[in-house]
Length: 203
Image (cartoon, rainbow, N blue to C red; front, side):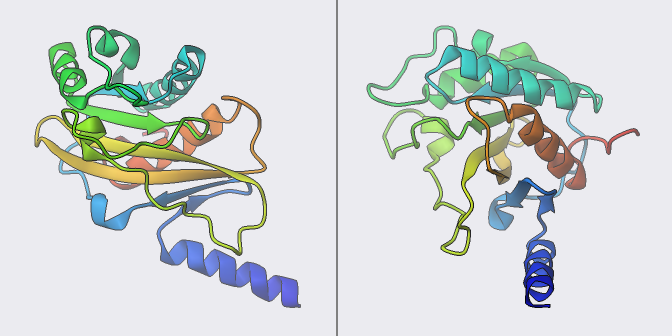
């Protein structure tokens, strides 16, 4: 009885915070940084913030694939990063050159992805520094005793020149490396669809 009550309370909390969840994967939006779309996105640049090239490719490919399945044209970060100057000791490139490269590619938005294995973003004075982003407090609490990974996401609208959506995806009992990229990508596509940025699955 106690276990059922506990499970019910957890489910109620997730619904109250507007989370997309399944047995292992939970998406938590940052409400004050997430708005409702006025129009669907047509082309999105997916940029993973990670020093490891193989990891970047895996994460960008997984999310780009899910967006493409919902009718969104995509480009990934490899071409956008070319020529963008790195800040010494930083995980990410300066945001300015990446944003301009995305504009030249015809994208109307950039989805920045920080995989769970990446080094946290630090404050800095570089141009935009990933849109002046800092790593948020870990969404896990003392009650979350199960091992979990956290992937951060930020959507930047190139038409309005403003941040449009922000979320974290937690995977409980995570697999090694980028093995969970597909699960995270599914949650991301679902979250963006609920906000109207992409079409709902199957429509």
